[in-house]
Figure (cartoon, one colour):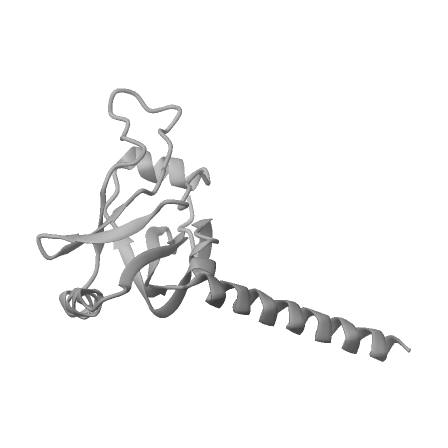
Length: 156
């Protein structure tokens, strides 16, 4: 079987960019069980309630739903178990220092395979207020309308 190459996205956290202001992103490996990898390769995962926390100076991802592998036996995994993220020590130190400040959190953005290895894109983020969300939506709508007008003008 040929080795996989490229990036294959399994799941994305669509609400993260709406609910949070993304400040910095990191790519981390994930410590997974065999049945979790098989379930991910089938394209099953949900990142809706995902978040990351520190335990004993290690970063852990919680709330990510990877369903049980349908052909697994008694060795199957728990669907919402805590999963360890694999990062370099200097990256962990930067992240922990940043989230000690008030208002910052670590949010998983995307779960994917990169050259056959499971990776997760995490971000240091600050929660948006309701008025920030409305302003972002308004800016997107204005941009969409201006592009639509330009397209109509070019057609004439």
